[in-house]
Image (tube, rainbow over all chains, first blue to last red):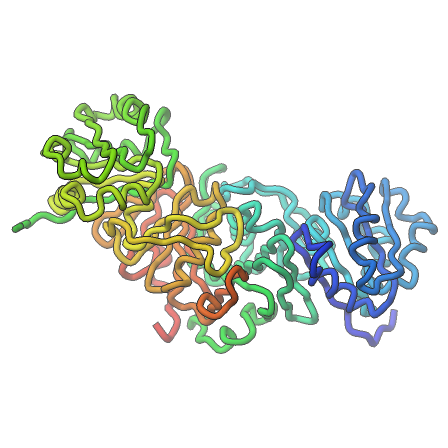
Length: 276
Length: 276
């Protein structure tokens, strides 16, 4: 399909975004819809009851007056013309939380997914929180231990929707102590940048850059300069060893260049190691 | 006092070291005592009952036959000749867990502390687990949130025993999600290297190097190359921003040079940024 528009923004949220106070993140979603229709995709949840009402209330006075829910019970429904029609004319799609594997396994390679991509390609906003954030990755994190260091072999990854290339997203990041598993993930292939997003915190991806929104921090884990890793050699269940990781801790207002793999601003002009 | 011996090793343990299985860490302590007397300093605890018995059992078949307990109820007791005599002829001192502030406030600048330093200077082993690990730092972490990103102002540091210079130790590291607070700590002064030690994991410091022992990982956080930090500018309680941190994840067998601030081995010969 011919298309002269830029792809729309992605808003990737670490879970538990504020729904009652300032709502900085939902406000950013609302602003980018410009009064258009938002589809709340509750597909990640096994029991989506209540999600829609909660977001309806949260978005009510942010100018989002056209909010509709999209749920699919099983994969067969993804071809249902009535389900597909829910996405007609949408200015954005918001994936709520649950299980990222449900999103990928239910809508991956279906007309629903095609239509979500089309909305994005045509400038629509795609937002996702928690599982809805994880699923944006090219290769997504599905499971792995929180609150401990990475153990060789203890990680479950799978193909995600791939709206963000060359990065893997983790969420509920500081709250669930997930630095270990994100380091484990990037160790598998340092081409992939690790992005860990705290609760009530988001990255707003526009083109090759993102900015940080919300109350917490975003951790970017870059293993490109790693000098030693035991991920392929060590015995299963032994602790990960990974030397010379670059780590950026980003807070609201910070911006990051995904292509240069560097923060924008003070950090952008720093000398880089000779072998880059 | 004239002294032609090298200072002894430090064994700094992240808490919950194995006391029943392989006991790799306690075994390393025992080996360095060479059959000599070990003083178990339970000073960090408000209720030290049971600690001694637990270590007595754990060390029993590791060749530590001379284990004695040192406890001080309050600071006045630190001048008591009977208490001081407990340290006579000790080949090592092991600080058990509790509250690091209790150790520093009860024995800091007392004859007990002087005697511990003397034992170390003369080649004795000083070991510490949990609070007993934290207190080894020059400036020690006393309090700060676990399981969340660092918030400006939310950190409590105090002068420690200073057996390790230029480094700040955190413990129960991955288990309690403490990367945030360690990053916060080093942001205050990047001269200080952050060392986060998992449970059942230890660093064995000999001279300017350490090696890693045990089941988990050790995280070294080096803020020397940081290009941007908001620690002095941001509003209280806002999230930390810290760009270009170097992070090393070390596992059993890995070694680290504290002076060069670099892992020993594969990582040691890597190019360093031009401004170092």
